[in-house]
Image (cartoon, rainbow, N blue to C red; front, side, top):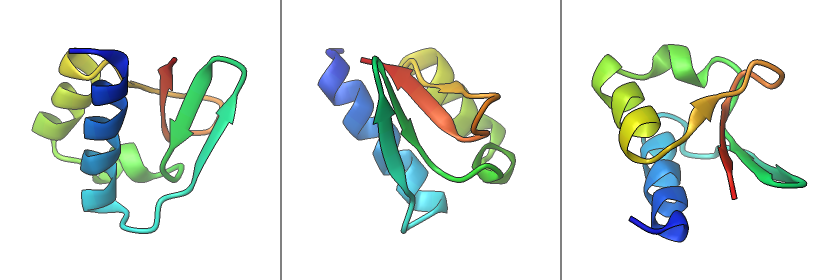
Length: 68
């Protein structure tokens, strides 16, 4: 799966939990979601975000991030 598709599908999962999620980008990382968002997600959605789409929980912001 290419990077753009992983970003798009990850955002779609995030929007399921946080319909008005904020996004930002810094250098080579795209961030999306609030600080408590990973805690709201089901274990299945967390696994999809990490293992299939390549997103990770960012300890500095608490939301999700992906290297682009």
